[in-house]
Every structure is written in structure tokens, then in C-alpha cells.
Image (cartoon, rainbow, N blue to C red; front, top):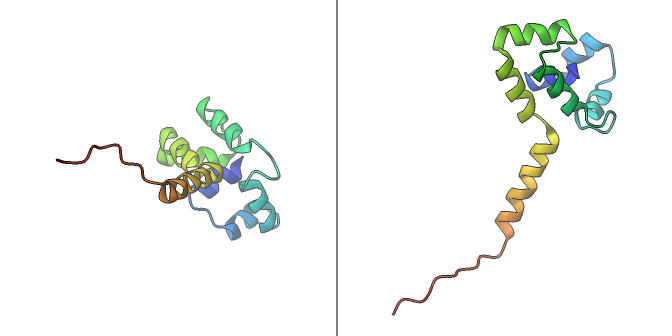
Length: 104
């Protein structure tokens, strides 16, 4: 869950590798939810009840405030971004139907 919050606040993969000593490909799996499903939601729930599981997360909350950290983490969720992109594409290619009457 720390990976989600730190990555949402701009931590680079190389910095995550130094912090957690793991393969950067593993971080990609974590961030996209293929390794731990629903981990984004668990991170947001823990933040909402002010449960800080890592000193680095606690530092972010102290520095930026809890609401800012929650908002930034929510907006960084790749599932929501992918949904927004698909919705934008669907709107772009949807047929336009006009319901107005012709002017006489």
C-alpha cells in the first residue's frame, strides 16, 4: 500500500527500488492491481481511518495533509484513469443524435 501512496506523490521507480529493495517490474504489477487486487482501495480505507502503516506515509501526511494525500492517491488509481480514457473515447466516437425540430 505504501507503493501506491508514494508513487501517487511522484516517487520514482528507482527510489522505490531503493526503499523496498524489489524489482521495478514488481512495482508495475502492484500499481496496476494484478499482484494484489483491491490494494488501492485498502490503502485509501487505511488512510481514511488515519491508520499509517509506514513512516514515509506518515511523513507525507504531516507534510501535505491527510485530505491532500487521499485525493492524490485516489486520482492516481490506474483503474479510474483507464475508465476515464475509455469513457472519453466512447464519447468521442458516439453517434450524434439531434432532437431539435427544423426551423421554418
